[in-house]
Length: 291
Length: 291
Image (cartoon, rainbow over all chains, first blue to last red; front, side, top):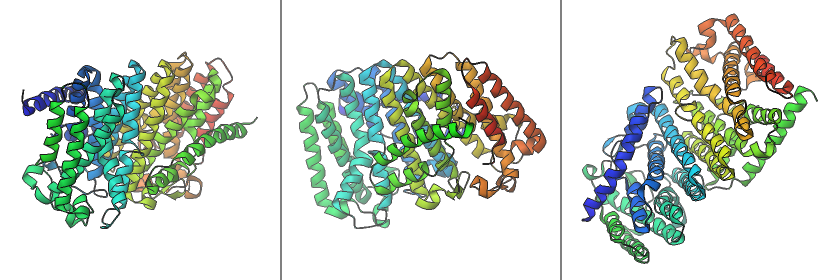
């Protein structure tokens, strides 16, 4: 099986889980369920679930033990996008090529759709806690990394420094680590926690590097990409006076950093006993992505 | 001990827990921690924690088994107020006599403060799940009642029907039950779940009635109260063309309904073996409150 086939295999597996969840969602009023479904089903690469299933395969942890964690993670990721796109946050009108949630449902409903997704993610995670101590640990890890010492801290720092075109490298790293890398890290660490925690620190480092890589390529694409491929506006960072890795290091140095990150990720996977080919290809896919 | 002394006893006990939590909150950036603390520490009656501790006393469930649930519940309640006050939701400039969160920190930060409080509540609840199956059940109950089939559903319906001055009694009941009663219900049901679940259905009904009572007195106070006592604007419902129990039934019939609710609550408490005096007084306090 080549990389794309395998990616699509994981993707289809996850989309089935997601579709089942979305069909079962019948809360009132209708607009609440509709607005949650709208953002959940607006495509996306599903990189977190794919990563989780792939690391599970590498470590011999079955997908059925991970599927609810993958679902919860995608719900958390989606809520964060909805709130991030709000007019008083990043103010994005498009997401994945479609009008963002608040453009379709209004800001009030978008706030509630996000709240609803976050709360439902925890409803799923708390149910997992019945299955044993390692499931509680996995839920705890997601919660910590998604929270105020993780992703929300990163979003807050991002908002704080918005438009201030000259903040420190330390601040940039804080934002990238917390806003982007931490949630990606949960995707690769959860299978390990469920599987016994043998590669916990290695996979934490992998997640951190992959998140940084993801953010670097995001910044590169904002300069080099186009709306058609990305499904969102480009050149937006510069227009907004936003400080990015590109404005800090320049485009070429940024690409070099991305290469170093990708290599480090590869080395970690190679150090894990098992078939890591797909994950190494996935890292290269992130490095070379056009959207 | 009279009612006020006992109320303040519970209140002080909870405020100590809350203060300890707030001192320990050291997430970055500073504005995230500050905005969360601002709303958490802006006073309030703490009726949910007080209720929880009082029901615990009635059932013989010790406060130290409940304190983290009470804390999580107050975090959830506070996040819901912050998001509810947002310009595109209820658009309230004041809360408990102080400028609302978004008036002080801006809408973007207020969204994140709310997200942070919600996520932190679940961080607390997931940790509780290590303590046993009944703790998982209690966490699950809170999560369900706070979520899209509970409070968030109520907020969404409230937003949907905002300004539409003539919706059905059924819609009004849906909003009051979900937006207000469900979170109050968790406060009285959680001690019972931890204690073995002997009065589960009675306390669920009690919470539902008390929540309805709370909402009825809210509507009455919006007509009869004043800013000084309430710490928020009055006459706002009518000005906003908001449909309330007062506009549906009239003021006198509303008061009669409140009396019936209070009586039903009292009867339930009397049916529980133990000293229910404080809870019956608490119901009467809600019935006769001026703020």
